[in-house]
Amino acid sequence: MEDLPAHPGREETFGLCTACHAYRLVSNQGMSRERWDETLTWMTERQNMPDIQGTERALILDYLATAHPPKAPSRTGGFQNPFAPQ
Image: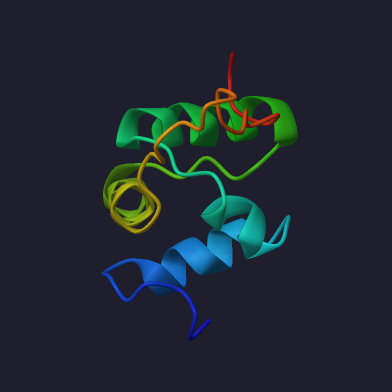
């Protein structure tokens, strides 16, 4: 966990995400807060992730948006997240 950016919510985000998959999948995404929020909703509805709401969800979304913001697209259009809502 030492490799994760140190921001509030790091431990909570790591715990939530690694319950189902490697954190590298998360850290490679790079999305806006809105897209992270849509992705959490999608995972709750489609993948049976626990429904995280309130201050815990806000903390996790703040961490994701700060630690893993959108990446600049490459000339080929960039990586398309197969798990993100379309």
